[in-house]
Amino acid sequence: GIISPGMSPGALTITGMNLVQQSTSVIHIEIGETTSGDFDSLHVLADVTKSGLLSLGLHNGYFPEIGDSIVFLSANSVTGDFDSLDLQIGGIIFDTISTSDAVSLVCIQADNYNPTITLDPTLSFDVDDSVQVDLWAAVDDPESPDTLLAFGFTTDNDSLIVAFDSSTGVMTLTSDIS
Image (cartoon, rainbow, N blue to C red; front, top):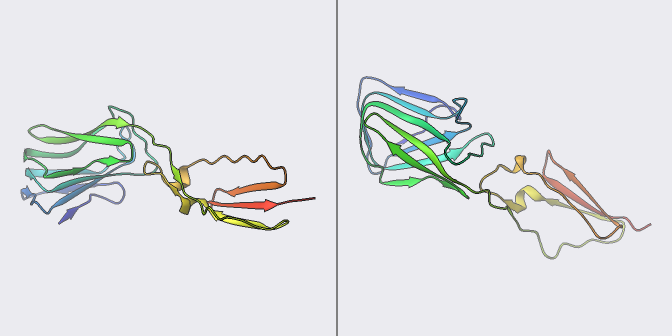
């Protein structure tokens, strides 16, 4: 099964039973901020045996710094190892640190890769006409949600007007030959 505590993010407490992960089990943790407690946490008031997949998601535009860490799992005792880790989002990489009663995630790399923008190479329009381009559909930036990206536009052609609607991600190019 999949354990994904809370509602982006949140806390889940398990009482009265041990948590024994299987090789097909998944624990998915979201981090929105490390200092304010804005991250998923799993508290087991018994013993935990780790196995399966541990995966990570960033929430609410959070971009970590190297050394940022959270304790996401606490229990009476923690044993075993995760079979696999999915703790890389673009240039951001986390690792786990386990103790006898807890598991933490710590950021070990925080490179903000440049986004990739792929536009239609045949984009063309007539004089005194305009064309719209959905930049959010054209941008791939694994570290940041599209709505948090900032765009800047320049043109060497005085007859080209560029307008960008940051609420929709649509860029409008208008030819203005006067």
